[in-house]
Length: 162
Image (cartoon, rainbow, N blue to C red; front, side, top):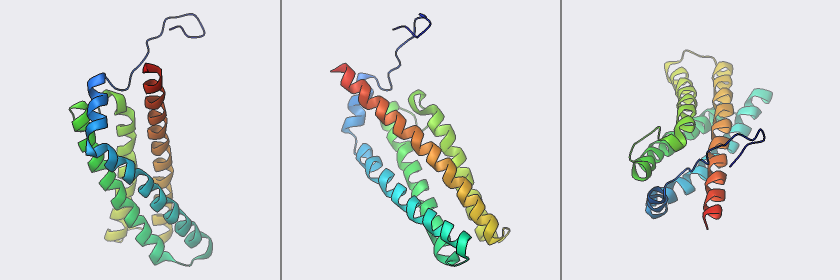
């Protein structure tokens, strides 16, 4: 394969045949397939509640609860995703195919955890907490986009292999 300049490029495969078989055979693929859209719905609801609070001053408690629930779903999908990576790639995190997604995921987790720290330690104002939540949500959207892009690449590569 050549790029636009005529230089040879190497085709990058996300999965070897063995990894693809393990991916398709493990229950953790289904778990991730269920948790990802659930987390996205929780995110959307929470985002609306956070914006509502920031624009009206109403609903701090429900916005806070929604952020805690969103953080819990994030932790759950990260733990189950690490198990999935172990089954498919033989290591819990930072497999070559998902290295940068995992690196960015830790940034997302750090921001969500900072929110929890600020909330439970009582060291941040409600507005600061909501700002941290919005930063965490922005990072989450980027990270989710990384994973959607990888899923698309995997699907295209699977179709190309047929």
